[in-house]
Length: 225
Image (cartoon, rainbow, N blue to C red):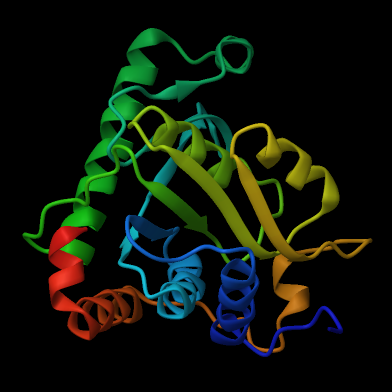
């Protein structure tokens, strides 16, 4: 493999084959994609493993006056926000600011879940093997937050799966998941999009269509999810 993926679907097919070769699949497995791009990869993984597909959404808690700086995260399905207290203090995030920002990010998560799931209930996570998929990792903050949030929801075994990531990020994920599957760890890493020939932005409509396609492929299995 030359480390270059044609697009997210190609990366997902390769990642699904790697996971299948490691014995993943079968009863009780659930694949969760991080929208939007990660869900496209996850859809191909779910197809390869004949598993139900859903989303996990992690939203960063933004620092005051520095919206690109994450001082924590909120994860769908997890009642406890993840906050870096030292960073929050250093950036001047007061308890009142944090309450408002966390509330805002929870509302955005609920809005997106309603858009993606409609009126369907979330899948049960307790006692399951859950494969968490993104289209790649740069800093890995969102992915790490998703794993931490899922861990508190009773997952039996967490598997982190990505097509491409820098080696140092994989070491961090290995402390949060029972298994880490990554197809390529190029150095220098540069950016996730460098390793895709087509890295066009995914859309909400694409996410919704892929989730619907997964349910229609095996409706009885989707209900059990």
